[in-house]
Length: 68
Image 1 (cartoon, one colour):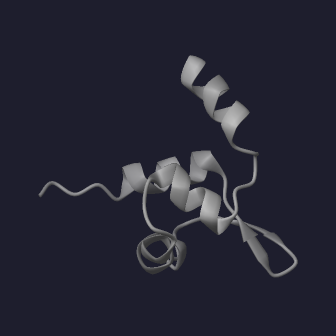
Image 2 (cartoon, one colour):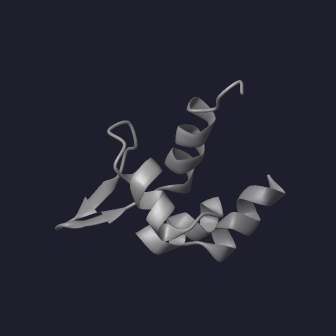
Image 3 (spheres, one colour):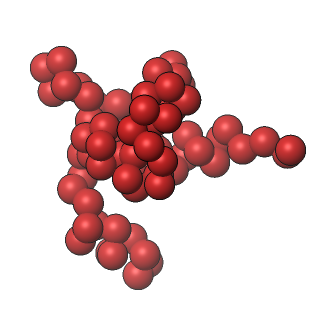
């Protein structure tokens, strides 16, 4: 519960590409290549601009864990 409150204070509800990559701790180019272009990642569109929810980013990462 405390982590959620801290996250809400630091990040807006809808994250830009740059904010999403910072949240995940990866380079924006890696976000584009490995995550952003994946068809399973849900996003919110504002015109032609993409925005991402922290819950969706977290779910995406958890659903794509490997055993290696």
